[in-house]
Image (cartoon, rainbow, N blue to C red):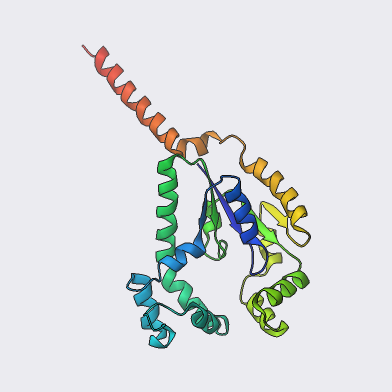
Length: 230
């Protein structure tokens, strides 16, 4: 099984690339979706976050006000680290189960769409690692337009994350999303061909079919030995 890491930064276009994979039938495990699930009302993650940040972050229906919580953690690095530390075990577990379900279905290539891929060391579990990159000026302009916020606030949000230039140096593959969507699609097609190449023996051994083949071979071997015993 091939686990491909996909990451980027806010307003870099990572979601665009993720959706391109989905449109091509490549399964994607989205850490943001998992993160939303682990803080639903009554879950263990929800209880941890409410205990740490108080009832002021709750909506009238008891769900967490994600916009309010996001504002709190983006403006306070210590609280952002606290939130990441509280939810990391739940998110990791959620990602594992999503991958396991796809493994059971026989998926051989899975994209792990994780914003904090490097920060959480998940890059060590994925290969190759794809970084969606844009130049700083484009990133600021797109974030301002997307969220309707002033330049200073956009810069603060961007600076709250690992710099894209730093992520770029850690990548196996870089998709430059600074240009048009057509230019991004052309790069994507090359990446799709690259990650769709045949599995290595090691990757195949970790796939569902590989595991079943190993088990079948082991059973056949045991039966053959027993048959030849006096």
